[in-house]
Amino acid sequence: MKRILSIAAAVLLAAAILVSCEPGPAGLFALLEEEEPLDKGTAAFNANTAAFVTRAGTYYYAAVGATLLRRPTAGGAWEMVTVPGAPAGSNITAGVSDGTNLFISYAPAVDTILRFNGTIWGPYGTIPSGEPVQSLLRANGQLFAVTQSSTGTSSSDYTTYYSIYFYNGGPWAETPIDGSTIASGLPSSIAWDGSNYWIAAGNRIFKGATPAGLGSDAQAATAGFSSTNPVLSLFYDNDITSNDAVLAAATGKLWKLNTGGVYVASGTFGSSERRLSSVIVVPKNGGGNATVVGVKSWASDKYSGYYEYNASQNSLANFGSGVVPSSAYDMVSDNSNYVTTLDDLSIEGFYYDDTLGEETIFARTVMGGLWSNTWDGVSWSGWDRE
Image (cartoon, rainbow, N blue to C red; front, side, top):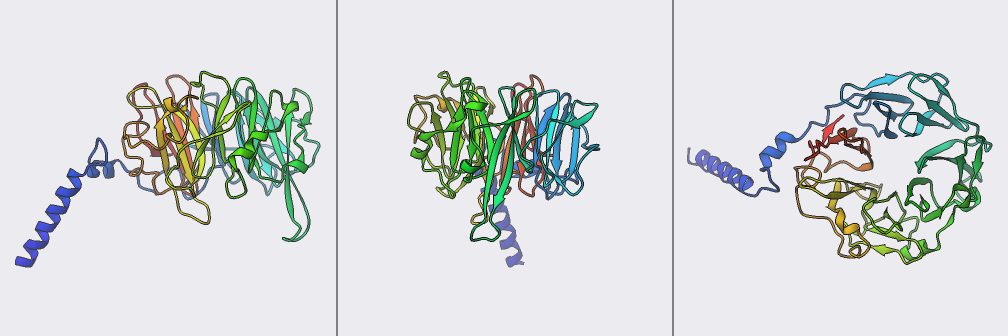
């Protein structure tokens, strides 16, 4: 009996310690109650990675493999969307929207891009390369398509190249950044700062005032980007008063990309090896804005989750080594940065719908489903699995 009583006392003591050591505004047990079970959500998303999520009209669209899904922005269940003309044996590689029309691409089908206006599907131009479309990018109303080609037949001489095309209302035209110059990585992220397009492609950054004027940004060399330190995401913060910089997520740090000046690095996020997969700025609880930085696991590590810091630090005067994750618990989720439903999941990327009254941020996780968090004008709802 004495042993049983000792065990019971130990349990009560542990419970008291847990309650007293609150990681944020809510106790640990409250946090656990807020956790969403990993088997909850739409079956098509569970244990999968969504290729994209975006808004077109009054629907959110997302894709997994060859399956296109949508749900009303006001809420409801996800449903599968039939795509007439979808190429057999291919998966959806990317999707973007101009607010009304949805554009999706397929691979390994050759140069297949389809447009959906909410009622009718149809092909959207022909890319002369005859190569698979790996990515679609859109900024400043301009649509870009990235195609892939390869040379060689074995691992010793096999090289993958990418080309960037832009749609100018007629045929697709190739940018000056042709495949011979993009062996550095997939052009996967774009930003428009009001003066220039910025495109991240592995260990290189391209920029230009027009699609036809894209060129390699020499300042990227100062950041030391490489195959082990690639740029995985770009984002332009509209609160930056000087219209001359974007944020780039790389390995361990963010970088401020400055036109005509040396790039500036943040402090270290977690460790110098963490792959920062996505960066985005959204409102934060309590007023102001938060910068949210996703972490993606690679084969060599198991890092996951996301970081936050106050977006006011993105000003040119403040950005630098002092920009590090915040320990505050009141930015995007009521939960701690490290005790959330996304803590153990690798973040592929974020998408933010800033439509007034319907603000929602989505997190695409690696093999962990699609998650969302809604803003009511005052606070965030907390992460929930779609």
